[in-house]
Length: 344
Image 1 (cartoon, rainbow, N blue to C red):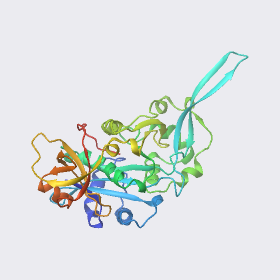
Image 2 (image 1 turned 45 degrees about the vertical axis):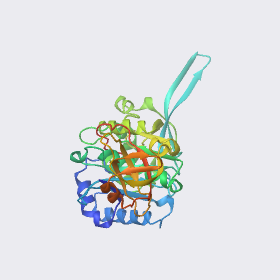
Image 3 (image 1 turned 135 degrees about the horizontal axis):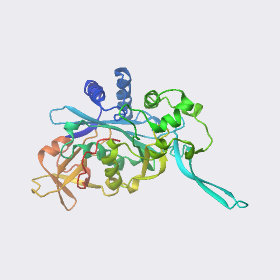
Image 4 (image 1 turned 180 degrees about the horizontal axis):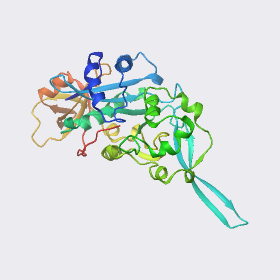
């Protein structure tokens, strides 16, 4: 398997993936014309023809038969064209000394403090492809790309994890908050947001702090809680150094987790090494390996052996990376896989 930049010829395969994805997971347009536009824009991004504010790095996971089986993405800089909002969960303290009463009220503050940071998003891998290291390659391979081209990204990476919703896709948080101001159902608001039409948020969302005690009990209970489908992903990203610092999605209250790029394990522990071809022993650990190219980026997962400044891989791995002995790679040894890391 390899991770590589998307091409317009991948449109039919990516469209099939989007149509089969569970609602709310892929974050990709279900309209073929819009999806084609996003793929072409991604090609321009990898060719460095767009500003960081508009950069959309869309990757695919491809097997040795050149079959596209998964997608994932990176955004260069959020909020640089129009405001990118979250709620920050804080506390408001009200006190009456005369009555001897003090109340600490959990409060939601509308925030665009993530402006300029980069986002991981649009990851989808079908259940029947989540074997071996496939999910980790598709998800964490993006971090090797960031490690190699850090100047293209913000100081932090963030991930919006899907919040709690019922079997019908309804969000208790949206029903208690957003519906009052937007007069539309949750799925419609999500669709507008995913298509990049977020200006309506700034136009309609109240700027005043919101006391959570005014929300329904169901809405209060899901604040900062990830959907069950994101639990494994949260574990993997937590192991990489991502933490939740109180920011939540304004639609479904899912956690917005973050990590300084320099603290992300895959970035921090990656090395630039000389590629060599040999026979790694049977006990050799799996590595994530990037060919250090931008437009012709290729990332794979393979058993490898470190010898001095050389990374010893087999011929098939070198072929997947389109490299020759002596070429430079960026690589990092993988942690023990977590089960079913499939989103973000």
